[in-house]
Amino acid sequence: MRTLQKKRVAELPVSQQIKDVLIKVLGPNEEVYVEVVGGRIRVIL
Image 1 (cartoon, one colour):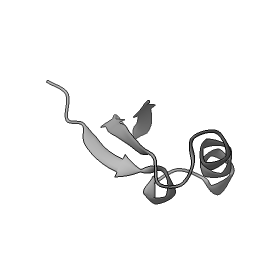
Image 2 (cartoon, one colour):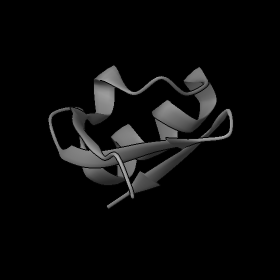
Image 3 (spheres, one colour):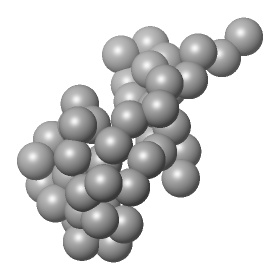
């Protein structure tokens, strides 16, 4: 079973470089779904 969390792009627990690209494409206030699996983070648009 998946555990998805809804977060704003500016609040994502990813590296700053990835966050910068997502902010440019989506904007800092856009909400995305985040799934953490085995230490990896999956961002679902």
